[in-house]
Each structure stands twice: as structure tokens, then as C-alpha cells.
Length: 638
Image (cartoon, rainbow, N blue to C red):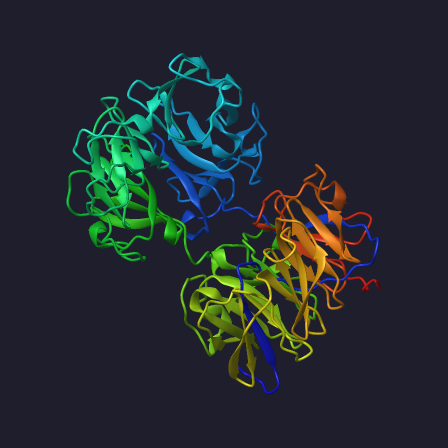
């Protein structure tokens, strides 16, 4: 709804939405967890928000295992439909070998596979290792060393891996690793090179042989010992079939099929692959699952009539039931006797912590804003919601979890959003959302949602001109203003920015990544005139500005405050991942500044749970994990 005299600014940038903060000169900070970091476990799989699923496998009892890349953990879905964590503590890193797998740190998970004896193996890509979980204990079985392997075997734990994408076991029970373009075999604790995918010979007439460029992240082996990998290009120009995505190659043999991504082999040695929003069987002209149309539909009906959205991994269980990672829908779907159902995941994210402690919620914040009443509003695009944290409790204020557009002039919690990437709150606690996927700015007022503006280019951040002035930053960026319901575009002549923030006077601040000097800096734009107020060097990823114009920015693993044109580190550079320590002793993981409060609390990501967790920097000597939100304190004069 548009109110007379109100001016809104809506910016299209390539960055993250920001808000305000205040702190005193020379103030030291400490760090604590505020919200997020919760994991999808001990709840029904059908209603869990799974995030990215990097790997999948089934055990001999028919339990389904998923490698959740978003949460750096492996979970099991049992016959009771509940999710149980089996490896990883939810914090990215490397630790835990020789101890309980659930206490270990994992990093950038990829493929999963079960050994014939029932031990679980996982490709811990970020740590360049293959790790094993046996009787609940985790260990490294391949990688972590310095030895280069070749046809001559070397100890597996002494070897160095480069890109362990996928794993499988062959008919002899040996572990097969797709390590970049190389295929390796692990047998008896020794690793050796089977060969290189780039030397595959084309014997099927798709170009007369040559070098394979690019390998996917899947591998499969049949009962005869043949190894299959997806190849993303195979010059000279191969015959383009339907669908024209990639190639399946048999190592040392023929190119079998155009169009491959995920791979799986059933108990009859039939080879299946994903491509073009469908699952195909090699040798068939039509998909066996999916119509090839991106979407979500078909549960409870014929699998061939269903809609999938970017299916990636596939796997068969011992009963030849097919499991599909329907990644675009953030679900796992199962095909049994030709009928498709969902067995895990829900785009509605039914159980993501609403009504409970903010520190136990599932969250993926990309922008935030502090309201006049001190509550924090968070843009959570992974769950298609706007969340609010007040007194330590998290709730949803907009979005029903479905990706789409709908609900205007009705309850905001029943409305649909499509990648909400920015949020702002005005002095009356009205909330404005950059509904990026819908190219709209939505307004939430008194619990109702409306469209404040429909824009030509999708907005990714929003700001409110408190002084009524209209200034903008951008180069290729665009700023729109809405005054009394009229939308106007402001032409920009200054250097391009990555994100926007405003102060109480209506001045606009932006990251200057390509202007002079080329090292980068921070621009202040006042009355249409742009001034570089700090030279930061390259790699600045976010900034925040308080109502008085104090600027904070993040660069690498550090957070800075700008004073007299110079950035001073206020957080990061240490080794601690714990709460309640001085901020300069903390180890930060690519921090992104989200927002800050007038009481001196700065909100950011970058903790042990990475972008899924909001942490605070507060100007105190020591901190603790809050149970009722940030401590209230008067603003410190600068």
C-alpha cells in the first residue's frame, strides 16, 4: 500500500541488502551466536528443509542416506520416516577422525557409497579425503597425504587427492574414486590409478575418438566391472542427440549415450542417468521418470507423467526402487512399481524452527534489517520467507515457503515469495521486501502483504530514504524511487557498486569495485556527488552504515570499521569458533555484514555454520550466547 509522502528506494545490484549500526571509536567487540545453525534432524523427513543434497546412497536394509552439503552432515532416513544424523556436527571443517562420526567436521560433501560389509564411505571433497563410518566411528581411508598415486600403488592414507567427486564399489568390493579426471582404485589399503577419463576412446562414432573435456560428479560400476562416468564434452564435435547435455562413457570403451548427469545401475545392470529434468535408461527413446518439464507434480501417480526440477543424483536400493535427488524442488523422490512419491524434503519447510529459540532454527540469511523496536527481520530465500527474531524467538512474518507469486491483499504468511533477497523496515515498522524472482517490491503492513512496485529489472536490495532525498549509486546498477505511488528510475553516472546502504541523512554508500583506484574502495554519494571515503583494496564483500554515517565492511575473513578514511579490523583474525570470546580472537568464515542496531550490535554471518548462522558483534568486553536476543544498551556516542 502507498502512503502519501513516503519515498522508497529500490536498488538493483549484485550484492546483499544491508542496514545500520553505531559504535564508539576504539571500542572492542566480542562475538556470539544469535540465530540459525539449526539442522534437519530428529524430525519427519517429509517435512524437513534439506537444502542442497550432494550425495545419496541406500544400505542393505533399505535405509536412505543423504549428504547434506548445506549442513556439512550425513543423515539417515529410516523406515519410520525420521531423519537421524550419522556423520558431521553441522560445522564445516576437518576434525574427529578416530571418534564418533556425529562429532566430526566435514567440508563440502559429495558422493556416498556403501561397502559390501555395510560400512559407509563419503567423499569429503573440501578436505580432499575419502572418509569411512564404521560402527559410528569416522576415519580417513584415502587422502590426507603427500604422495602422488599412479599405476604403481601407494598407501591410500598417504596419497593426495585433488577432486574426489564421486565414489562407488566394483564387483570385487574395491573402492573406485572419481578424482577429477582420474579414476583410482583402492584395494587392501593401497591406491592406484586405473586411468584417466581424458583418454577415453570413442568407439561408437561420436567424433572418431579424442580427448574428453570435463567430467561430471558421478560414477557407477556394473557387475562385470565396467566403470561409467558422465563426460561433459567430447571433441571433435559429437553427434547431438536428445537431450544434448553430456555423454556417458565406459572407461576404456565406448561412448554410450548423449545426455548424462547422475548415474545409477539397477540389479539387472541397466544403466540410468538424469538429464533434461527427467531420468532416462540407456537405450530408450523416452524418459522413464519425468516429462522433461521443470516443475513439481505427479506424486502418487505414474512416474513418467511427473515433473522434476533439475534432478541430479539417483540411486537404486536392493529392491530396485529408484531414488531421485530432485534438487530444484529440494526433495528426494522415490519410484516404486512405476509410481512416484516424495520421501524427504518439503519446499514449504514446515519445520524450520518457527516459534522456538532462534539459535536452533534453520536459516539461510542473505539480508537483514533492524526495526525501531529492536527486532531483526531476515530475508531467508532458501525457505522463501521473511523471518523475525525478537526476544530470542524466531517467527515467519511473510511467505508460506512456496516459491512463486501470490497472496497480495491477504495475510503475509500465506503469500508467496520468489527469492526474497533484500529487506528494509521503516520508522512505523512496515517491512519492505526485494522479491527478486518476482521483480517486485512487496510491503508488509499490519500483517498484510501487498505489491509496492513492479519493476523491469529484479531488485536485490531495498532502502528507505529517511530524509526524503533521492540519491543513487551504480554504473550498470539502477535505482528506482516511489513517491506517492509513482515509480521513477534514476540514471546513474558513478562507478558500479556491489551493494547499497543509507544513513539517516539520505546519503548512499556503496562498494566501488571497479573505479579509481583499481584496488577498490567505498563510495559516499551525497546530493548526486560521489566521493571515495576509504580505499579498501580488492575483495570487499559487504558493508553496513549507521545513521550517522559510520561505515563497516567485510573483506576476506575480517570485519573493519572505517575511521578517517582508514579501515581498522574489529573482528576476525583469530582461531576461536566459540561464543563469548573477543571478536579479534574469533575465526570467521567469509563474514557478510547483514545489519546492525542503534544499540551497537552488528549482525553478520560467518560463524562455524557459515552462511546458515547469524552472529553478533557487541561492544562489550565479554559475551555470552543470548537466550533473549541481544542485550539492550544505550547507544555509545562517537
